[in-house]
Amino acid sequence: MATRTNWKELYQDLPENIAKVLREKRVKPEQLTAKTDGELLALGLSDTDLETTRAKYKTDISQQPTVVSPAKQDQASPDKPVSTSHFAKYPSHIFGRSKRYKILAKKIKSNETLAPKAALEKLISLATGSRTIDLHLNVVDTGLRGEVKTPFSTGKNVRVEIFSDKTVTALNNNEFNFDVLLATPADMPKLARYAKVLGPKSLMPNPKSGTVTADPEGRAKQLSAGATITYKTEPKFPIIHVTLGKTSQNIDELTGNLTALLKEIGLTKITTAYINANQTPSVKLDLSSL
Image (cartoon, rainbow, N blue to C red; front, side):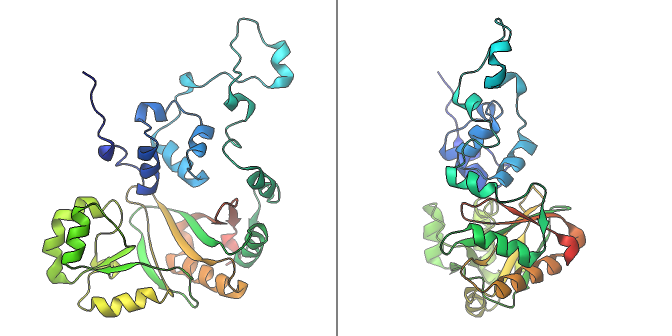
């Protein structure tokens, strides 16, 4: 009898957003190492997600098709296998991207780094409509966390939940309809049983992040105002993802939020920084300009 796969137990060593995609697509670890980068991008992973995944699950080269460019196919040895698959025709570094994305990517110079304001202007010129702007940081180590009072609103609607009996019912039904969970110190013993579920999702209340407080109502109003950015690394990877604002916001407001966040985290702790909007390529930031 075949062993049934317990999907909930797989990919505990990857960030939750990546694990969720792999579980939903029913990709087993042994299949993951056999897939090309292009196939993973096609599943819905971003470039940053791909790098994070490959750091843990490296490509099994022996499982990859031998690819020969069309120009050299006539010169290929007759006994050497030549892939005619879709992935051979569309290399992994561009496969899975839309035609629009590829056109936009050509507008960004290779290895170009831009100061915060110039990077935001470039990104806004690539985006259409009002899109969310996200900042992605590679930092020196895991465990970095904190909160920044930004000079302007991020435009993000933060769903704040104050722990109650209603929360217990939702958790028992595996429902997580909130972005931040607040609790009082007296509530923490009741939440202990859910730590294994809330922890990997970065939803477990913690005094360091200000989500364990004697005044959860006041804290909820502060977080809902949209002028506070809470940041932390992924549980096992030195990567930070935060939302800065919307492309429709004033460029000086966005620049102020971005600069404030980078300086608060500490430039010496950041190795590389990128910004992108929904469905746009990333723009690399020049940290030396700050």
